[in-house]
Image (tube, rainbow, N blue to C red; front, side, top):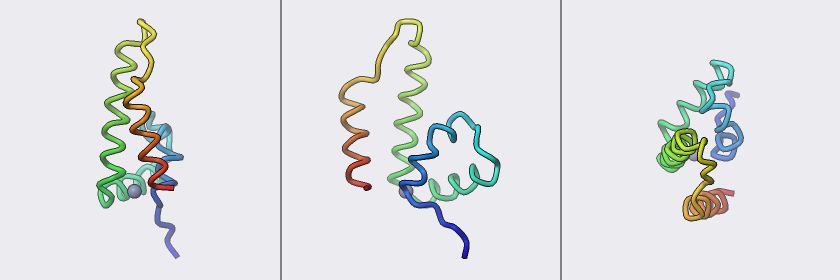
Length: 80
Ligand SMILES: [Zn+2]
């Protein structure tokens, strides 16, 4: 039986996905899941926007805003 990624699998791999350090097959499976799962796609978008912002401002040692962190936590709790 083909392994279908669950939302939790995606969260576990999200960092590697964004760094593009996954093997192509796993990366593709995540793409498929994100295409079919709007909530994960939204999560991915906000996570990516957040990490880009952090990268841009890393010289200034900016931390993730509390509001964003709370939102991510709430999202994860709802999913698990
Ligand atoms: Zn999902």
